[in-house]
Image 1: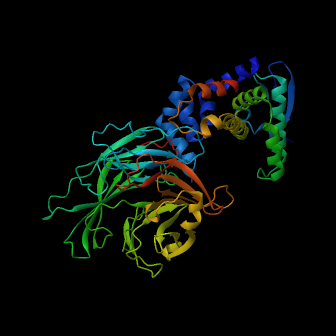
Image 2 (image 1 turned 180 degrees about the vertical axis):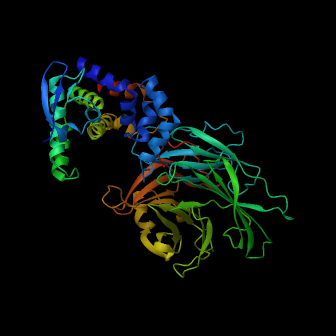
Length: 385
Length: 139
């Protein structure tokens, strides 16, 4: 044992060897290993190491937990997807000192985009935006560029979205979309500004006269395969290509059309593909997961779930209080089955579509269903913000 | 006619190594002499490193399944041997061997800390447990 410790110490004190060793461990482990020694702490915290680690380690496709965004009165909450008897931490984003409290807008490959606002619809240019790495508890505060003074009418802030893909680059970008025009008109003057974490500055992107899925309200985006996508009820899918810097519209493709009943719709991304979760049927007791085909060929139904078949396992809940949050796609050759995370009454559950089994993730102690709550995935990464 | 290199361990044992195997080491490659003393590395460890080099020199395709299996068995050694091998491979600058050995240590760490790290999330305080687990591995 004595010689083993001596040998390990030789390796452990050799910074270069230690670095090679630590680069091979997952972010989740490294965050904990900061407590081992001062050398480990300084190595793991160094931006250079974090950059190397981020480039080297692909982001885990499956989140280990998720955040629930804020309602007017409660802070963002953290709910684990792993089997654990430990209680969830109560104030996960407390390291960001903002008296207003935080609203989570988007989760992208381990980083979160947040805003100091009490609700996700009243968001304007003066608000502070944050790009947060919840794994390392670090964040960057970013102010939006002021509106251009030459315009006669101030442009409304329509969206701010985060694009981060460590398989492409260590740096993230923010896309800010503003538009002006009168509400009855279908087309707006759209202005796009892009922020790069590399230059830490904003620059003007494309300006175009076209249609955007939200005319009055703030609409968060979804990052998928190099593009930010926006979608809302009754609307067509619109995207902005980060690398090629152009805007695109995906025409209504006659696929399961959008109609008034489908108000319970979740738009997200999993495994490099866009998904929509819709509830339908009389009493909203059926749910389906739609996937966007290759090259935006159309939405096709990937899975159907009958909520009535689930309820025997759970006490009766009125169908209207069932709400899906996100869908995790299956990976071939992996142990991960396709999973839906949803709220059923006062419980958060994860439903395995293949096994048709439910697992309770957590009980909601606040029975109030008032307030918009969205779920944002949590994946560990050491990425620098 | 390929050259033959002589590697001497810290306990004065000499190993003869053919050129192809020897040149897998950057240290040997950049050495002006064919006789190299490897300080702090005993014969038992140096012998294993030579064995690895010989195996890798004779087979051209390192992606070959048989070599992979041989490599996997090679690194399945006791902790103390593992760390000594890393030190030796590092001194001799045999990149691929260092990679394989550190990967093995990484796997051992992951396995050892599975319950405390993998199954809990970052804000849960498991410092003491983590320190003990890593201590038992020698860190």
